[in-house]
Each structure stands twice: as C-alpha cells, then as structure tokens.
Length: 353
Image (cartoon, rainbow, N blue to C red; front, side):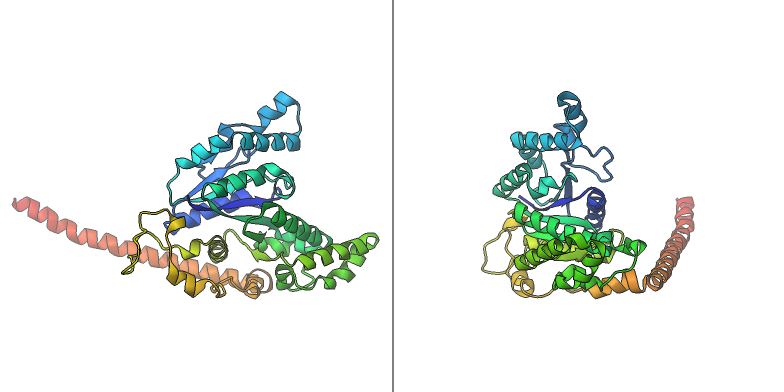
C-alpha cells in the first residue's frame, strides 16, 4: 500500500486548497497521486477526486432523516464510515499501488482531537499497509493574537496526542499574514515554540482575568515539547516543495527509491514491490539525520519573503515571470521558423513526384 497524508484542521484553514495545490505539484513532478474526500459536506471539490464519501453517505441526507444539526450529522457520518470501512477498503484497492494518497478530512476539530471514529479508521488503514502522516493546518493569522495563538497550540497538541501519527503542524496562508497586523515577535518564535513565557505581558494586556490560566496552558505545552510549525503558502512552489520534503521524511517516503532506479549488485531485486517495501539504504544513510535544506527551509527566509521584503520579492518574481515568458515566446518563434523552412522543401519534393 502507498504513502499518504491525513489532512486535518479547523474550517477555513485551507485543507481543500492544499489538496488541490498538492495534486498540481505532484502532477508537475510526475508523482502519481490520488485524493480521497472524507468530508460529506464538501459539495464544491476543487481537485480531481478519486474516492468521494458522498457516494456512501451525505451530510444533508443524515440531517434530514435524523433531525441532526451540522456537527451531530458530521459525527454520525464518520461513525457510519467506520462501521462500513469495508466500502473504503474496497475503493482504495482500485488505486494504483504507487499512488500517493491524500485523505481530506472534515473541518470539525473534534474529529481529530477526541472523537474515536477517525482514529479507528486510521488504525485500520495503517494495519492494511498505509504509511500516513497527519498534516494539521492552522490559519497563520492566529499568531497575530497571543490568546488565539495559545489556543492553536493547545489544539495542535491535542490532535497530536489523539491521532498518534507522524505529525506536521502547518501555519497555512502565511503569505496573507501581514493583512492582520504586525507580529509581536519574529516568525521563528511562533514556529519553534521555545519560550512561551514571553507571551505573559501580551496575555495580561489582552485578557488579564485569564492570564494565570493561559500561562499554565503555556507551561503544559512546553512540558510536552511536541508542538512546532512549518509554514505554507500554497501558491508558492518553493513553500510547497519544502513542506513535501518534510512530510516525505516523516512518512519515510524519502527513503524509497523510484521504480526506475537500477538495482545494486548482490542485492535482492525489489522493483516489483510496492513503494512502501522498496529499500533505499543510500537515501537512508545520507538524509536520515541531516537537516532539510533548500528555499523556504529556514523560517527566517520565509519571514523575509512574506513579511519584511514582500514587495521587493513580488517585483523580482514578476520580472522573472516576464523573462520566462519572453524565452517561451522566442522558443515558439524559432520552432515556427523551422516548420516554415521545412514546408517549402516538402512541397517542392511533392511537385517533382
């Protein structure tokens, strides 16, 4: 069975947009990918959907039949999917063995923090051979408010403890963060989650009544030492590539060679095996312990790109796009010129015949 991601997060965090961007990226990279929509309320799916839960159950039908609200109906749909897991298993068998699978979850946070259905479905998927990572999207604008940032930390920690998967927390829409005001600290303070005591003054100003409670929550988060964030701007290719590398390393996909790689001498031929069972010792030894390098791999570069010098970067990128466009136009003109040069010779030869 293939590698994959479980994409979760609160409503409006950009889950479906991320799945669509991932599908476009993987198509450009010639990596096979399939997306599974597990949100029975998602009527406007922007990406090509390989498996859709609406073929099994729809939220609107549940609400009408049982008189439930949106949240209660969503929980019922997930419990129904858990009870009918054989339907999902049968649909997944129809995918190619090397497909990278994205599971797009609903936005109800209780599904990834305390409700057991999604967790039980994950266990069944992992038992069947899937190697999954949870990608938890949080809207980046929450870091502009100290109390909201603390709530996002608590939500992320709860999801990590509940899902029990390799977990990547992501500050999505980081390219829009300047629209919500200035940051009180550099961006790396919010992504690395190192010393939350610096938030005390801000929390006292914003909600003095709950300042002590907020600091106790911060202390709890620091005691676990689990939460950290990557950043994401879906429309930025380098940002998507960096996040893909992080996820591939978390799932182990980075250590698996493509089928086209030649087999080393005196080793067992595993080219016919699924991706999750093809070993790649060279990648294992060269990249297992090393840091991920490349554009957008350093959060300071992300801050420079989207906060400190955004206008300059935007102008530079537009100039590069114009340059690439002119190069494409020149190449097309050269191809047309070659075609015109060949066409008269072909007509002349036809006339002699």
